Length: 248
Ligand SMILES: [Zn+2]
Image 1 (spheres, helix red, strand yellow):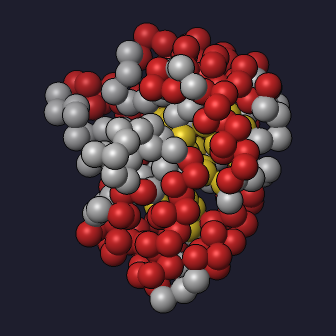
Image 2: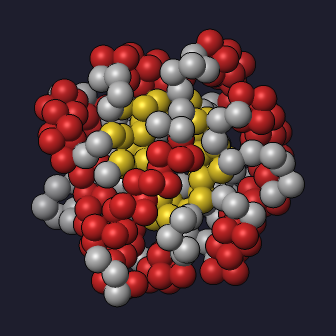
């Protein structure tokens, strides 16, 4: 089992990060660390050196973050091309960003990362909230590999994403989102990935505000139920796909 997207470097894990990682090691085969900005990327690189072969970093610039970091981040990606397994998270966000000028800026930055993914032959880990179609259109004809992280778009777009050879990552959102359930049901087994987006998307916020990488098991159980499959089967497909797309 590999959680393909968790923010273990978020301040939420500051006090007990190593304890959480040890528990992850008991439950999982690996965690791909998503990063949204420069300082988080530095932490992910350091952490994955300490836990080599278990933690796998990706570096990116989230579309709602401060874009003045972009050159530094691109340099960091180049300098660490041997250690990172992907470029992310990157993409576009029309949910929080309504301003047209800012949206254009997002597209400009995103195209830089698409070119970088092509050059370094690394998969893109995409944040596409309410801009799923726009992100897809920007990559569909490019020779890149891509993962739509926390995908919550339309079903017909999910079909085109799959037909194009990209991946869709189902998060613990599947426990509470009807739309994500629909997507999880129709995904072919060679396109499915599992993630938690920890510390976000906690399965039971009243019990614990944070989410943890081992909760991909809960997502797998739900997906298995929806597809009349076994949990082990779902986990095996997701593991095989994760290894393939991130080359780990
Ligand atoms: Zn994320």
